[in-house]
Amino acid sequence: MNTGRFVLSQVLDLVHRQTLERLVLRYHAEDRVRHFGCRQQLICMVFAQLTWRESLRDIEACLNAKTETLYHLGFTKPIARATLAEANEGRDWRLWRDLALGLVAKARRLYANEELGLELDHTVYALDSTTIDLSLTLFGWADFRSTKAGIKLHTQLDLRGPIPTVIDITPARLHDVRWLDGLIFEAGAFYVIDRAYVDFARLARVATANAFFVTRAKDNLRFTRHQSRTVNFADGLRSDQIGKLTIWKSRKSFPWPLRKVRYFDEETRRDLVFLPNHLEVPALSVARLYKLRWQVELFFRWIKQNLRIKHFYGNSINAVKSQIWIAVTVYLIVAILHKELKLPGSLHRTMQILSVHPFEKVSIHQLLTDTDAGSNMNDNSNQLMLW
Image (cartoon, rainbow, N blue to C red; front, side, top):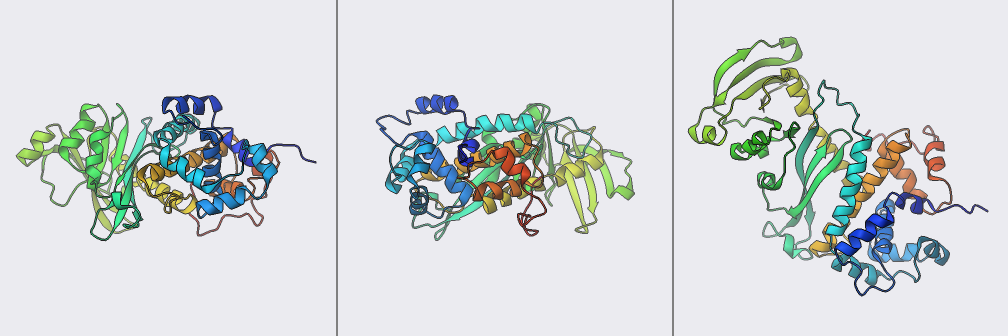
């Protein structure tokens, strides 16, 4: 008989008990708790994310199906959905945020040497947001139209990975550009942003932090050229100019020199105009940097397709934020396992194998490395792939 540990238990080994215990004490998350602690809550929610459980009743039924399984996972009593709901509603969501951020640091170290396809040693971040629609009846706190509710996931993604380094969850009515006010910019890093974030007073904060940005110019940009540089038309470049903003109010907000790089995209047959504040990086690298912004869109698609973040097990803002941060934790755990074990295939493949074997008693290394990539476990060709 195989006396090994469950795959689910091995997955959760990446969450150090001492780290979780320190966070529990910091947020008083187990005050007056007798038998359903934060680790039990985490086990239930990670299981729900890995196996895409539909509801609290679904989680309860699946985990209670075998009492010996619960015992080996560390439960002393059967799981009650009311108890899990109460934990999601009442325990401070910041505990799960801090737990995920600890895994972010580990994941970034593992992926620090990933190639971006550019001759740049700088850290490159992409900033964007995605909206998740909610029922106005159930999530009244998230209203942003007369008949709709929703939340936004504002994300800063380290493109070597890609690993989310900052995630803010706000009601959908918050405009994207206002999110920049709370960010701390890293000196020497590049921030690749969509033109929805173009506000020169806010972009000035990036420059004063000795960081760099690459964004697309809006159609109404007024730019005074001071210098033109030679470009290679064969690379799709049309111009590379250095100058300053023309309109007095914009120039007062951003008084430093800017570049305006015009590039013709063969795929879309469009002229694109980029605004970087780095004056020396090659013009073609500017266009390629902006193209990397697509990674954040892929990240949003991946987590929506593979994790449970569009349907929620609780209706309060605390329950929603807790569920999203635990979903991010699962994403990071799978990304770390994928890298540490040097697994074949995509991250989607790793996730799918884990999802159907949570209660197998087999070494996780054996499970993930011995699966034949050419067998029936092949990735769906229509499924988004990262890595």
